[in-house]
Image: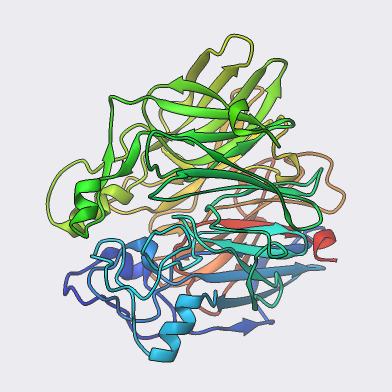
Length: 479
């Protein structure tokens, strides 16, 4: 088991997001001979990739979990065998700090005025590309949570191929969670900034260039994180969470959740113009992650993980407030937008269980889906994923699997088996870390019966810190 030096920030405070299961690793490893408990299914062929924050140098000032440099961990499955590797996402900021041998940026908890550079739209923070990984046109794109530069990676070697400008057609930034329609080959995205235009929406065509881009009017700067698509539409969000302008003028980053404002959802034809967007209002909330959306006649159905209180629950030190801000408290939720009447209806799918980081069969993005696979969020001070939850949209059934005491997992994408005929005809793949032993493994579960537990456990040569989003790339896509 490989371990590295402890990375801390300069505040002197004990930051839980730099310790234990979150502690960064410093070694890039390639390992072909891995111990397997159970048997890897021979019809599981492809690569599981997960992105996450992994600080390389001690931070200037206080460390926020979102500040860590992007590192992708991956396991490639082929004919019943598994290979592991991990690599840094070599962003412009990563290269600049590597050359300097130290941290050059402050994080989002500190005054950014002396940072070397920010993103294209004027956010002055370090773009780490540490948030999501998606597959499009033979490459994996690593993105950043506040809207930044998409970095292209080779899905097997994890080599950073460079900034993806989409054939020199991308002017601006790229949000954390773009959507790919495998039926058309299109990629849908937005970007936002602190100055007008506050929101831009675009489409990358199947040939790889931006073929459509429009500026959309918002009342002010917002912080949308995700979007959705259907067969004919895109759904964008104007949510009542935004940066406190007074704090920004003082060089501080503080969010305000305005309960007097509604949540608004903009439905626009996939290649529509700004005047064609229709706004639907709902109760105030924040949404980090969309499950899926689809059309039912003249209605659009949108399933999300809805946060009703996206603000600290109490006061305390800046570190305590950061920990409180980060803590996920989300519920599965459904909106219906009636395109005939303009009315919104909304309801809980699961009002009781705190679940997030949803996954579906990626082949069905934008089309009706029966199953969603979420992580269960533990009742703890920090974000810990203690199990998986499988939702059935048809029967309303919920199935769970828990890792056990002190064991925590990652987002678990659906991996269709070879010849898969349905959205539960395959497996769920997840990194799992035991905090007591400091060891990590990959677990493989049957998607149709997760409560049975893993069919195989692949032991890894180093700990995989808890991180953010994951994807599955099928062998046929790799070819």
